[in-house]
Length: 241
Image (cartoon, rainbow, N blue to C red; front, top):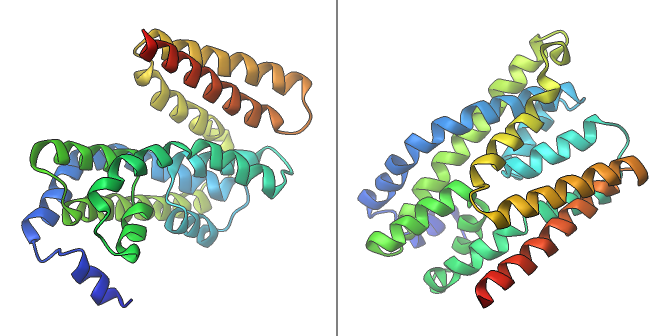
């Protein structure tokens, strides 16, 4: 299916909805620029070329997964299988987000679903669902939101990679702590109930013990699995009550 036909299927001739998606995204987009810059700088720091770093953002477009992959590349030799498995676990939440949108997207062509699914991240999903609750689903709105985030993310990554090439020793600036700090910044505001705090504590303990006693980077996988199981059990218990 041609690009023109795909755009037509998205019905973005309904320009107001597309523009609304872009407009509603602008206040949130500002917050991802520092993350994109850090992603670009750290990609170059761990040995990726600027082109490879930008291509990662353009083809993967998943901030948490990219930071995890870059972190693993930066700490030493890591098998690609380990990196793929880790990023897959991190992004399992996309299955749930996609499932909640599936009823609204069921009539769209497969190519359009794939395009919209590729551009879905936490922020664009939240914006799209908020729009669903207020006015109903519109593919043009989702595309506007997705495209806004995609362009800013790739552009800010490219800017960060450009800066990284011109900083003699990025680690001397403490940038090796940028990714853990950003993960913490994303995590802490979400710890709003006992379940969240408990799952976070379990993951932290398992990760630390695993880092001390397990070979390689298996502690990352084990901590992800422990957190997932703990979260599922605790949420199930809460629902039963």
